[in-house]
Amino acid sequence: MSQEIKKLIDGNKQFRKKFFSPESTLFRELVLHGQKPKTMIIACSDSRVDPAMTFDCQPGELFVLRNVANLIPPYEDSDTYHSTSAALEFAADFLEVEHIIIFGHTQCGGIQALLESNTLFFDKKSHGFITKWMELARPARDRVTKEHVTATLEEKITLCEQYALINSLHNLYSFPLIQQRIQEGKLAIHAWYFDLETGIIHTYDQQKNNWNPL
Image (cartoon, rainbow, N blue to C red; front, top):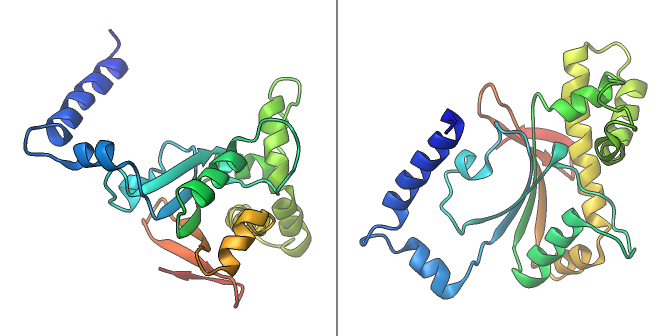
């Protein structure tokens, strides 16, 4: 047995010891009453970004969707597979969450490769799924290359990560169900940006078009 698998098995033992002991009732309550999270988080698949850990949340508190670069596609009414859109629909219509947070972060590999035009990463023959998916962030890349010509590469990456968050926020508004729940005062949507080096989170002010620490 590999050390990686052994670590997971040992971790599960600790998990069961903590949450499934006779004195722990959390999962019994979740099984009995079902999940009722008030917040959905769309986070990156990056192994360094764990929303539950970042916000010190217990099981049942967050409805979490993770994908490459925490991107949201625009609403599309087509008969095909829409994983991210399906999760949004489930969260808004069935769970009736009150907040949706798009949770980006620094040092995002997908955004960095997009900005650097990494031809290996975006070889459509070898990485067709990634190439197509990252097209969602191209408006952010185009904005950076047009408006911030003299910025350093590090500055451009940060800006591109933030612009991609704003672009996904705009795409989120394109979903009729999301618009309806916002208009009814039942839903608020947010874009947050997590710094891996400091742990500080900045939130996007949609009225003032700027970023401020939480």
